[in-house]
Each structure stands twice: as C-alpha cells, then as structure tokens.
Image (cartoon, rainbow, N blue to C red):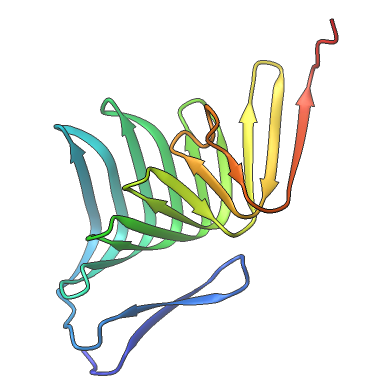
Length: 179
C-alpha cells in the first residue's frame, strides 16, 4: 500500500463530500468479497452486516464497505433492515456511518429514506443531519414526516423515538374520524 494517505469520499445529500481516512502507516489487512459481520448479545443476534466487499485495517479497527445490508434483530427475528451504497464501521466504538441511497424498513412497514445516517450501537440510535423522509402507515392511511437533524430509535420512531432537531413537515393521508 502506498505510504500516502488513503482517502475515500462519498458525495452526500448534505452536499458535502466527507473523506474517510485510514491510517497511512497501516497496511491493508483484508479485502473481503461477500463480507458478513454478526453481533451477538446473550446468545441472540443483535444485528448482521452484509456487504458486497469490505476493506479492513487492523491498526484503525476500521471497515470500509460497499453494498451495505444491515439487519437488526429482536429476539433473533429481523425487525429493521437498512441498505445503502457505502459505509464505515468503527469496530472499537460501534459507530457506523452509511451513505448513498439509504433505505430502512421495519417489520411494521415504517419506511425511511435519506442520503446518510449514523448508527450508534451503544445508544441504540440512528442520527442524520441530511433530509430524512419517514413514512408511518396506520390502519386508514399514512403519515409522512420529512426533516433534517433527526434522531430515531431502532423501530424508526415507535414509542416517542422520533426527535427532529431542525425544520420538518408532517403530512397525513387517510380517513379522519370526526366523531
């Protein structure tokens, strides 16, 4: 590997290319096609990360991934599936950054789309400073929330999990019972 600084950049919907830096003194340890990483908690899967390929550097404990598919589990059953073009996983901190056509869908059919999202494994929170569109269906229609600066729980907002820090719009389409 070249002794120079390796920089991979992604153009985010926030319109800012953000470089992903790797330690220039560390050699590439692994380049793996069809990569899978699973996190277990008390014998059950917490999440499973699958990517088309991954580059891992030991010195940084950093994974750079392409073709991201991140599945979260509740009692070993898939609950939320998140996909994106690329990602970065800091193995020591548990922080993940996924960018490029990010889509998430829950088992109860909540749907999120954005261009960049962060997952904090320790806190169990998604965060995005980019425009986020969240669709929440109910029995007669759906609510569409859109805004920037959003924090979401693993279920994409059930039980007071949505916190939009900046501007947002909410639109409901469906029947409203006036009686």
